[in-house]
Image (cartoon, rainbow, N blue to C red; front, side, top):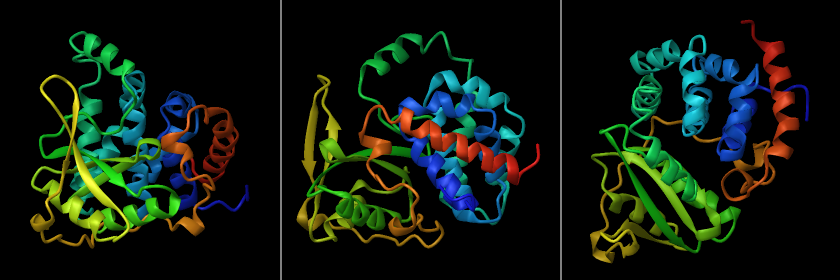
Length: 276
């Protein structure tokens, strides 16, 4: 990897590594990566800040990380600064607020949630399935035609254009996308956006009373007007992304061995670039 890594390249790679549950503990335990992510929260580039927030949100999904993250120097203060900064886009503030609430409650409800956590660990890891923020909700989509990285890129472009989408992650093996959205955004807006690609169609996956799943298609005549999002910066384009295997972060198991070499490189870059 080139020694001339820039902040956006580093934070995007950390975000992709953090998306894999197997990497989250190692990233938080690393002496350079977590402090580096905190510094990225104060970066002048809004792309860097938003990508750093996504990485931190992934890391906070691991309950064992939360106490250390909460106690890390500058973490809570930097999240507050993002929430209070007048120039921060709405979705960026909402994501920062969600992370702040998760870390703030770390250790408080540990005993009550032990049984629920054990059950959650037995289920397939999913991102943003909690309801820690009443202003946000989670929608699970099954997307017919989500077959490769090209189609995934089309989905990303469609979802990023919707005002009210906070974040999302793909489960390519089962053709699903888990989307975190503002509570006032209708799920139909997501279906309209995906269907507008002309090569994919979306259905909403809902839980039944007996714990099963039901796929509910979006009605063709229920297309809603999608308000385009102009606040959130675009993700790093695929052709510029340092991650050559785009599916690794969310669909493959066992990427921690490959990731640790890069993690060491990223930590060295952070150490050379910042002072703490």
